[in-house]
Image 1 (spheres, one colour):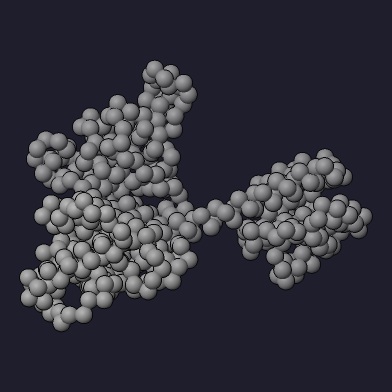
Image 2 (image 1 turned 60 degrees about the vertical axis):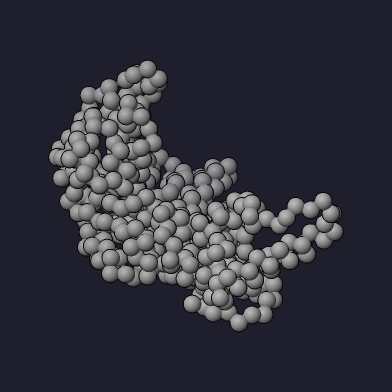
Amino acid sequence: MTSAAPSVLVVDDEAPVRTALRVNLGKRGWDVTLVEDPVQAIDALKRAPFDVVITDVRMPRGSGLDLLGEVRARWPDTPVVVMTGFGSVEDAVAAMKAGAAEYLVKPVSKDALFVVLDRALAQRTLRAELVQLRRDVQERFGFDNLVGATPQMVSLYETIGSVADTDTTVLLQGPTGTGKELLAHALHYRSSRARGPLIRVNCTAMPATLMESELFGHEEGAFTGAVRRHIGRFEQASGGTIFLDEIGDMDLSMQSRLLRVLESGDFQRVGGRETLTADARVIAATHRDLKAEVREGRFREDLFYRLNVVTLRIPALRDRRDDIPLLVDHFLQREAAKRDRPLPRIPPEAMADLVAFDWPGNVRQLEHTIERAMILHDGGADLAIPTPDEEEAASRPPEGPSLPPRSDAPVEDLPAALEAFERSQILAALAAADGVQAEAARQLGISRSNLHYRLKKLGIERQIKHG
């Protein structure tokens, strides 16, 4: 990010040129530093950063093009504007080839100066934002963001570490919500293609008739509605990774087209004659058992073997319950930081309920449950996290037998009446369960942590067994 007063370093051996630039830029509020040659310029850059460098090309004590190369190597985020003499087209061309952001022709007009510098500053800001965006994406989807310490997950991490920095095709298999897309991001951002794009294609989100155009693109006029050329996802992913999500749902005819691309590396846009080369690593994912799909004739066997070079199987959350406390802590810390709140405590009873729950929606369902609990949190030290089953039960109206008898007498204090009814139901359940808290909670249709919370809220004094 640049400061309110952008800083510029002017490098020129002619005093009148330096003075004119100082006056003009000073009127625009720029902070201007003047030096006479590249040697002084390097010393100035070592002492402090600059938003833009303006340099002449030909000076007695060094070349502006040499200075440009030095700045590009040591301070790559600093744009360099080169000034050339009138008619020195060769200098301008050489400067742009060497990486100059802009060039100016002497004598420099004030209007041209402002336009060029504003454009160079905008490019610098855009590059800084892009770097920050890339850093944010890597932080969110990088390898270190994968959470789990069970043997299944440790083995998974080891395999990812072995294949990430290769162009090997990887197949991710696991139930919905287990984090296949997160693993695809981790594979991409740990590879040599991390600076390239990661292009995701949802193979279930579009009709088969549109999938070919989506993957490979089309030429203008290729079909009705093709009013202009469309660049497909394989071209968009050039130099990076293409992530084919839910590939098990792809139409058989498209499976055939995809297989040809994976085997030859070549494809054509729909309606086109030019043969293009696919330069993208392929990562595919599915929640389906592709071997079973092959047996049933719904997935091509040859495509399966082409994709099945390295297969990563992601277990369901219920099969790695020991990771649930780690995941809960991870999501809690993220949500607390997002909302700038202190980290709440989860009572042991509540954590036990979360670990015992089967989580049919896997990690994604747990993540959403924690997010919802934090949104509804009242700010207390403890955080109540009902499982999805408990939330569903709480949303249903109470059954007839548990309702109090109808009375025509007016209720003067509804909160007190509801509290008295709640107290009577809990005491009755505890009595029927011989004081065993877990059994009383089961009869009431709530979790042990929920029952514990209500006992504390109502101030019920009773010897309770915790069996």
